[in-house]
Image (tube, rainbow, N blue to C red; front, side):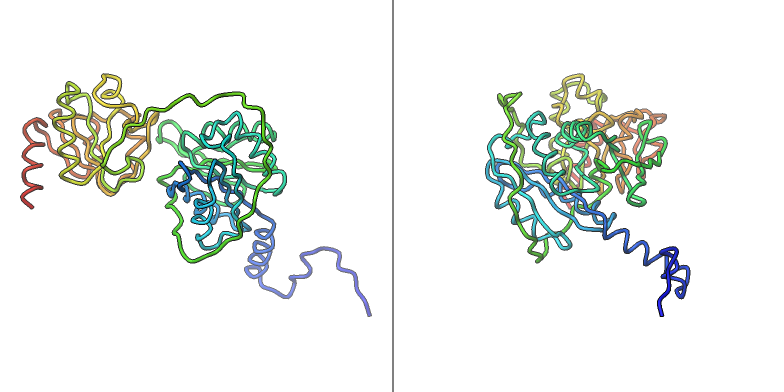
Length: 346
């Protein structure tokens, strides 16, 4: 005896509604595949970029990592240790070492086509922001940027208006291109997994741009983007000399990274790489100390997710006090040295 099933849902007629939904969701997730773009420098994996694996895990389905550069085998082997990762794709070619988007984009396009991915995720970093929009445009998709939460495979949450409003974005594109805010997804842990490492497609494009040089500010202090403690100085420090005299000893006493407001950077008190805010780095450390920073909305967008916010400012009406957990209304030139002395005594 045979029978004809007119609708696939009839297969689940004997299941409860919850069981059916869960089974359908499981079947759907198996069709998803995500390519997570990792970053490296001089062959060393930038472990903060492992947050792309964390975001990919929110989608379900298979997860592959992608690395390209002059000598990325060691970085690929390290990334392969993350639990739940099926494959690491690597391309060994000096052309891609500095991540120039003019060359890297065509490389990534061909590897996306080969893998038939439904999602591509990169960090909302200088690398991700310059690369992924090009790739999305080539493949006729619209990128969803600076995502802080993933609701499902089609729906993403991102802040707008300097974080004062939250936008829920639903994409119907065949391939979803997403950059994620680093502070919203913790980097995946390196465990004992051993994902397969394979060679990707190398398009060997004609170089349209040339890497000339870079001037990196080297410091023994923690990296600003990943530090658990950050002390930031603002316009209230009055000069570069005073900024260095006040902020550097404070950072060293707390074991913190140094940051700055845009006003301080524009005034020449601090290097541009230290800028925290909407047009700088977005940080979310355990402790964020704002010294001489009034708290413009653009600066708050870059640090308001910090766990504990402390502020020192002589203006009691400064906006920074509206979000600070601890505030001190006083002269920073007197109080910061006192704080440093007490920390050292401890």
